[in-house]
Image 1 (cartoon, rainbow, N blue to C red):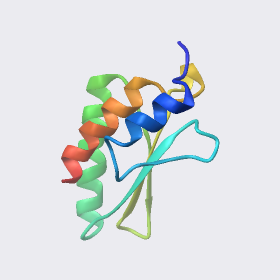
Image 2 (image 1 turned 60 degrees about the vertical axis):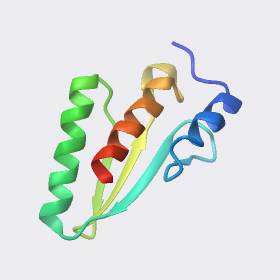
Image 3 (image 1 turned 135 degrees about the vertical axis):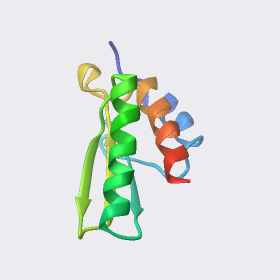
Image 4 (image 1 turned 120 degrees about the vertical axis):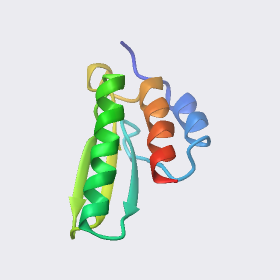
Length: 96
């Protein structure tokens, strides 16, 4: 599996405007502030269920009891693939 060329990744990023690409171009991330701790856990579990179904797992970070950061990359490709952008769109549906 090969990572997407940088220009393709930047093009797909325009479809998910709340996500950011890392400086090295190997991952995308999004932050989200929840109402409280239980809401944050609900969001992370909802993301986990979709990720498990898709077989593509993000790094989930919960800090200060309600701040979530989601990092996506395709470890097998050592960079971004179409799977990352597809999962990001699915995650956006949860956060909307």
